[in-house]
Image (cartoon, rainbow, N blue to C red; front, side, top):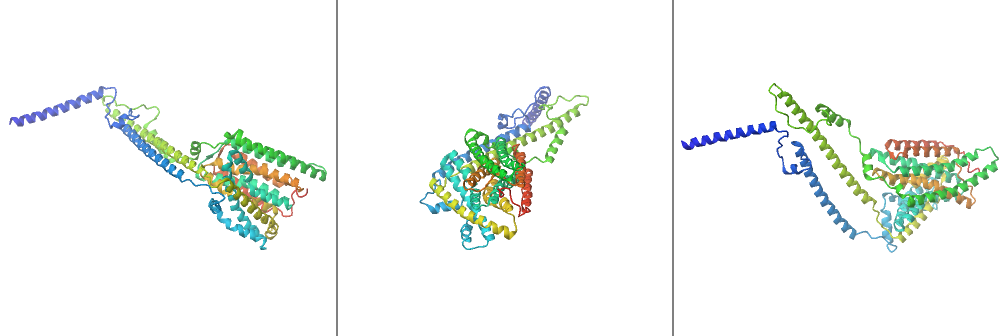
Length: 562
């Protein structure tokens, strides 16, 4: 009995002590100005957000643990990549020299998938001696020149890696439009002035409208907006405007009411002088871009490109968040919640409970917003890091050929391109007679596709990868090279060989060129582009193509009258 009594007494004392402890804790909580926060975990109390109580501390503790784990995984990945890089550096590809001709051929062929069409090169060279029809000769050599232009660019890039930035940039500028230059020289020697002029204008239009339009359109389909250097775009626009000035002045001069012989002589002299000044401007532009103001042509930072390329958030998710926020009150005016005061005896307990419920809902909205911001920031950082790694890997150009091997490849491919271009030019008359086409359509639409096909693929590929600065340099830079280097060079060459090659185009061609440059300047002036602007450029090119397809065959350009 005493043992049972003592046991019962001990249980009652325990219950009384627990009851008194609970009552004391409640009284302390009611009179205390700050809440009694239960410690959730050690990591939560040590985290920077431990000032928040309840579920917020646990949320930030889990975020801290996740970031710590991601950091450890990133460090481990970086260490593995460094080790792999060291191993790859030890087994780096050695450049192929003149003693390895088969290796040179293999690397040049495997540089692009377009080189499958190299099989047409021997067929195209044999087509003329074999007396193929003119249409077949034109089509075979047309498709054979496309991979030759790509291989020509590969050899130029390899040789530029050995010559440095200055000479490499000059080499790329010289051989960047080698196909157009070769076709123009061969047509000029044969007296095909109309083909030369229309092919030059067609190259400018093809690069600005077709290549640039495809870059803006397909790049805009994958990315919301794409940004590029506005300073570089303004420089490009100014140079294109200078080229338009050079073509408008001869057209305006020929509109004067004077003798035909005086107009012809004056137009020829004006074209020669203008060509010299255009070459001076082009050389100054190269020096400006490569030396004195190279910073203006630097690419836009990766963070800006990713921020512009982000798709806008859906309205449904934003409206849901706004509804939740309006249901619980303004998040900017409600302070960090604290425990309510002791309920009053006159029935004020219900209002206190409602305030606690409202504050709890408000906390839930803040927790969701904080988690969303943290996740968005983490995903943005991961995306920037991933794309920067990809850009570094893509931008690293490996030297695959020695300088002498690249020079030999450049010479061989240039010779093959010249042969195919000569047969192509010889078959143009037969093609126009067979298909009832005007020489203006062949020079304006068909021939520029030959030289721009390789550049077209390269520019669209880098535009889809959100490298719009490089794509713009390929499209617009190539047009500037045609207008300020190839066109005046051919004009001076015609002066030397006594051919009346001028910079005076037909009024129709001059108007088309002026409107094209004006449209492109409007689009690239703000340093931003999207798919709609690319679609406008493509539609403009198709309209011009239809106009030249309907161009009368018996209309002579003004230059042939000279």
